[in-house]
Amino acid sequence: MEFKVKFWGVRGTFPCAYASHLTYGGNTSCVEITAGDRTLILDAGTGLRALGQRFRRDKVQHATLLLSHAHWDHINGFPFFEPGYCPDFHLDIFARDLSGCSCIGEVLTTCMEKPLFPVPLTTMRAKMAFQNLHAGDQLDLGPGLVVKTGELNHPGGAVGYRIEYGGKAFCYVTDTEHVAGRLDENILRLIEGADIVLYDTTYTEEEYAARVGWGHSTWNEGVKLVQEAGAKRLCLFHHDPDHDDKAMAAIERDAKLAFPGAFAAREGAVLDMLNLPSDATIAAA
Image 1 (cartoon, rainbow, N blue to C red):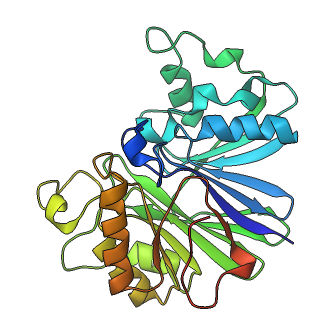
Image 2: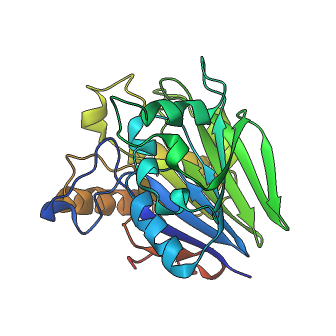
């Protein structure tokens, strides 16, 4: 039995190929989950390219992609996903129902059409299945592997995921914006008692004051949510492009002071969900 989480992309909004961002990472949202013999991918940001290369090396032939939503930074790695061009690869893609589109396949097709992209989706020879889901749906993806979903507060809508396996729970809650003075009941239900809650901590409190309505949150709100829900650890995620390594270290330090179980996601880090440290802290991999 294995339940592991690997970060391939932790940045929000825009990829950052700068030396000043190497410690925490510059690729946009992409997280790999290994649960038993199943492989899940959470979002298809620029981190998906390196994950696809690893899939080819390791001869991975099937995966399930769970998209939080279809904004650019969460799908811009998809056209560069090498296994997608291989006929021996199977990919199941789940996304919320999108207003005006029949399914996520229609969105990805449009993104890869001229004049936006030179290679059409039809060039991808992998066996792909596009499936709509509604926030609140539950997916049973294999023996003992359950994925629960919840509505998030983001322009155009987004879905959060709770992955349960081996008696542990990992929650993926990005992109979402809090409402001042009120905890989000949808999120509280989704993360109740979870072992790790990955949460959208794009802004500091000072930055958020000038960005209300942009669809993102703060580590301070993440701490309130995990404490109220009785969750064990808070993973800071969707790092703002303007937060270099020095800024991220300060943000992580402040979050840890407020909640010892807080830590910032780092590109390349691996979490072993079945063997987490007992002291509620996570060191960088």
